[in-house]
Length: 142
Image 1: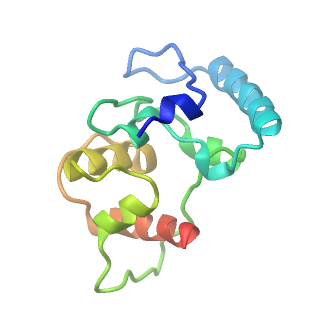
Image 2: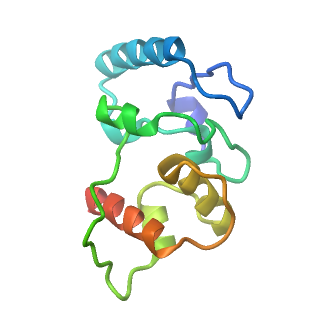
């Protein structure tokens, strides 16, 4: 409940709509490499404001290169969902909670998940393809 006391917040200058520049991302990657080494931060612990506080935060925006971050060792990403069948009893809310989202406001959690992993701003319940992405992420935590 008090993540600010045990985390490092990084602000990147962006109006919430624009693309992040190559210079910004390169600086961020260098900073993250140093922080990960010095503080031994686990890969899954690299998250965005909206991931931890989906009702209050929307940053970084849908243009943030989360896949590049994950490919560089900063945050989890999902595997190919081609041919994946999610279980009939799959509970998307439970899965969001397990991977770290506050689901007390499920619509906000769904939006934050989409911004991070689908790169869209969209309201509503998760679609089947989005649930496949969530399922693949969940498998990394179980």
